[in-house]
Amino acid sequence: MAPLVRGGLRSSATALPLVAPALSLLLLLGRPLLAASGSGGAGDAEVAQLKCAVCELAMAEANVLVAELGLDLKNEDDVIDFADSLCTLSKREGRWLRRLDVKDTKDGRLAVQNMTEFGECRMECLLVRKACQSALGKAQELLVDLLRTGADADELRAKVCKASCRKRPPPLKHKRTDEEFVPGHDAGMLQMMENRDKMRAETGQVFDIMKRDELDTMSDGDREAQAAQDAFAEQLREAREDSGRDWRGREMEEL
Image (cartoon, helix red, strand yellow):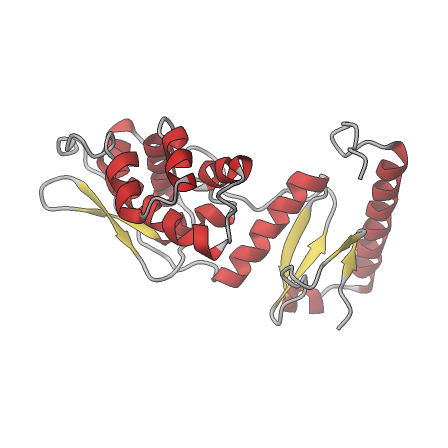
């Protein structure tokens, strides 16, 4: 099947198809991205309870992802980007955070359970993200150096998580409301969302994801409006190319 072109963007043979059996990626200018936002109100005490376990899980994930993504360890910039993305929910490197569920223990502390499926990203999802950021923030340079030397998961945990796991925090002084883990999008849908956000960052064009049944119920007027938006997006793309500047107004590098 020929690749689908929406708004001047063409999928490649190696990219995720823009049309899936149950989902379609549509260009809808002016619509907000459906991304998790906000700090989640995570308190320092809860972050302190979780950052050791989250750090250790992050190192295990990093070790697997290096091979899965074919990370070029000789390219320092690529490794830095990889390490910087481990705690980013909207990127492939940070997808693992969606599998984590926070549990209360009998001694008043918190534990993290790695579930077998991805969950909805709500308060606890943002809490573990904050714990990840707290654990890896000052250790990022060390993590990059270790990854480039081919360190395995055990060495990564021992060195990168040393500070986060040095002291066991005291039990929580406040009562926490446990949040039920609710299954969320599957890996295919998450990949579409990650690709959408990547395109947004690279091109400035805003994408939305719609279900197939939502497409089937679109009126003729909706379809005409969609076609007009696609045509306008193509005009914007051509105007940017003619101007020699990207969507942020920066000079485009010559190929």
